[in-house]
Length: 319
Length: 139
Ligand SMILES: Nc1nc2c(ncn2[C@@H]2O[C@H](COP(=O)(O)OP(=O)(O)O)[C@@H](O)[C@H]2O)c(=O)[nH]1
Ligand SMILES: [Mg+2]
Image 1 (cartoon, each protein chain N blue to C red):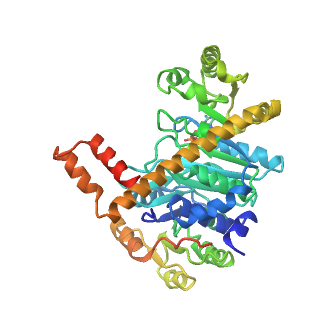
Image 2: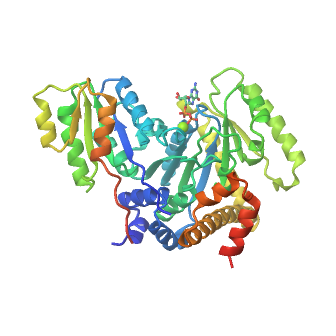
Image 3: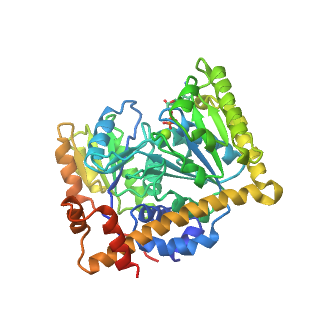
């Protein structure tokens, strides 16, 4: 059986190895992705974002359990940060997901950001497609949760869940500009702690403010759910909330769903275009014996400037 | 644009003893050496360890142990790797072992055993020398 058939048959080892190649940008993986693409589009993708320690992994673990009760198969992609100093990473999200390790209906992959900003890895969208093609019904994506503008997930997920904890209502408003706009659902986790109610109120105010401000919200009012993930409390509400959002996307002739798909496709297309264009141009330069380092030198020595160099390069290489 | 492959390593802790300081120290050392380390916490069964190693497509599994559970868990892990045709994954052990057990562990396929006195730099050096990222899959 070739690699394509192995992936389509849901073979774990083949899938795991392909994901590795995608992450490492091995060029043959692109050919495989191309062949898998027609088989994608069936999985439902749910994204989780929020600061480190708020309970994203624990929520993912609980939701995976809930989806398994429905008989759905689950793929999980969990992102942790790469150390900018060593290029290494400790990927620890699995610690909260141990109960799924022996369930063949759950596939978990830990990912390192590898210098990519925006909350995901540059490979995440491709990996979602692979897990989709291998037959996973639901794909849960946990972002790294350290950046201030982790909005990339909203372009990859059908439903985006922003996770907070009591006392963080202000922080959301002050620091994480942009985060209010991406949440389909807001979770106040660790509801066992003091101040949960207050945080729910604060978020509700922010949501209402946002609803009034943006007309294009298209009738979806973000839900706010309280959970205590470690004990499984509120998980049913969260699950029902995701279902409700899904129904909303599918209503009216799938109009909203199409918006989501367009956003994702556009994002992926532009990213690929940028990558390929850069690769092509650098390749052509090098084949003429022009090194980026030489161009850098010119700019440093004030022989030229970045703007003229770029114009020159484009004029030469894109003829 | 093929870049250098990153070494991916699973640090796992089989057995029942609850503290994982040693495992955390080695995980951090490996991260600082530039490796991607998947860390799964305590109380892992051989089945869980092998399933994780395969899903995460690691090049090496480092088993940290204190409780003496190695006589069962190490051979079992090697057996499960073979059953899953994943015996190309290197397995090493670290922790406290009775001297006479070490040859037995190497017999079942554990590549190297590091005892508590081992220097982190030496362990990292051994990994660099002996573990290479796997080949890409082909169509
Ligand atoms: N008190 C309390 N602790 C929780 C809750 N959910 C998660 N935690 C704990 O918060 C810590 C971080 O959780 P984790 O899921 O790893 O957070 P992440 O970094 O956002 O993925 C862990 O020690 C969890 O056990 C909760 O509902 N209540
Ligand atoms: Mg986490």
